[in-house]
Amino acid sequence: MIEYCDFEKVDIRTGTIVKAEDFPDARNPSYKLEIDFGKEIGVKKTSAQITNYYKKEELVGKQVLAVVNFPVKKIAGFSSEVLTLGIDGEKGVVLIQPERKVENGRKLY
Image (cartoon, rainbow, N blue to C red; front, side):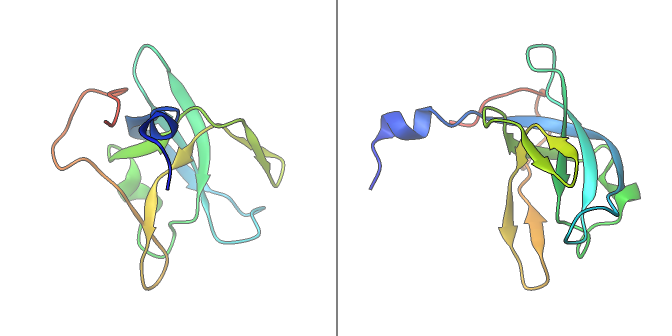
């Protein structure tokens, strides 16, 4: 069990995918994403293993949730700045999205 104060340390925000491209250097099939988290945080880069469920063309404009306060992680020479959240589906990762569109950068509570 964790305490509520532990959960408060994880900064989960809404963002809109503004760019998606192939990531051929990744060990597992992935995309490189750029996600806009609004004025306070800005645009951040990440990689996501979501190729089984999503075509890169349909990702642009999609709103997602991501952890924005993890340290940068190097993946095949690429700096992943945030962790896009998803659920392990039968064929890969399914993105977690807000039910309704909200302002980029809004915090999950």
